[in-house]
Length: 325
Image (cartoon, rainbow, N blue to C red; front, side, top):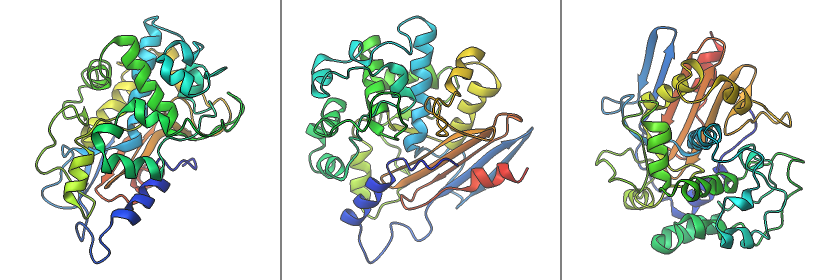
């Protein structure tokens, strides 16, 4: 697996700030392991309540959803991967980042823009304290504006959530729809992801799996706005459906666009919203109270998903189950 740790440092810092030292939220966190191996399904659940249809926060696994939505608009001619990011974002955001000179849509998609990460300890703490004012994409972006660029666009790879925060904003500006509405139209419905949604667009189910000792904190966070860098709640079955629709069934993108998506420009193990290694594609994720991972063997179409209601977990079952075949 590429050395990509989405949001992990910030999430761990938040856990230290918010955790109740004397106990965990649940002694055995709710978790689901779901795989489609050939024509067979494999399910391993932590308990009787948890199934492949139990919604959980998938965190940075959602970056692949954002990338697909963007590339579907590319295929329809709304813009190209060479379009300057500054042409697609609100003027205030462009000015805040010093003009975004030289950064294209492709740089955002491949994490080669050099933009620093907005998802810092300060952002998380402020968002939890004042959700209405802070948990908004335009405000979240300001947490990366005071830092210098890490490198010139296209020169290096750096995993920064800011890239996908901005892509979510681009989807909204170009379409005139909310990020949630765009994903519903471009990803969830075409891939038959019936249980998936961007958090903040509908009420959380009462049995939403919690992996944080403060249940109210968790529900509060996931009732706020979800962004393009990891704002989706989805069941494991839907994540598997998405991967099969994208890579096995050709229902979301053309073969040429899938090939572009899987192109690793700098040998970093990352394409456009997708981790790639030795014929295995997928993404990992971690956010408040949840951890996730999905892997697909592009040669066989086998796919494995693991979702855990525990922000300190490190899901490695998908790699293990596919690597053993």
